[in-house]
Each structure stands twice: as structure tokens, then as C-alpha cells.
Length: 129
Image (cartoon, rainbow, N blue to C red):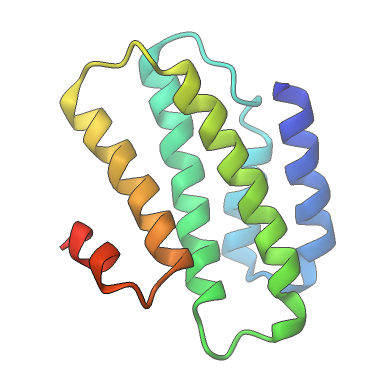
């Protein structure tokens, strides 16, 4: 599963390179190179989760920019989907996490992604306020 997710992301990134700013490409390439979703301890798992979250934040900013060319939205959504899948795998592997700051950070990252896909929903915006 780790290899499959990384390959999916690499393929999606290769297809979208022309529509991503260089710093976003670099951030996403770092995610591709992080060794999949496996981890040896909770700190490593949390770090991977947050690295993916940072990449998703960048993509959502592009998706929510009114100046984004509609022809690239599908490619960006495919990348976001592969990142969401990786986060899902990590969350499932982090079931023994009990540290409140890390759990709050992960919850905030998931809510931010949800709000990023539904930016007009006032109730979701209020959750992050």
C-alpha cells in the first residue's frame, strides 16, 4: 500500500507539473520521497501527516483562487485525493496516539482540508475560528 500511494502521487504530480508553482512542486515531490505512509514511531507518523497537510493546504489555496484556470482543476483534485488517501492511511496507523497537541494538530489539518473544499460553509469556517 505504501508504494502504491507514493506511485499514485508521483503520477498525478508528473501530469500536473505545468500548472503548479515551483515551490508547490517541490513540497509535493518531498512528500513523494518521504518513503510512503509507513512509520516507526508516533513522531514520524505525525510528521508525515503534517507534511502532507502542508501540501494539501498549498493545493487548496490554488483551487480556491479565482484566477486558477478551470482546465487544471481536475489535475489538482487528483493530487489532493492522493494526499487525502495518504492521510487516511496515516490516521488509521496512528490509533495509539494519545498526545493532545498532536491530535489537535491532526484534527485542525483535517478540518482545514474540509473547509478548503467547501469554503462557503459558514459553520465549517466557525470550527476553525
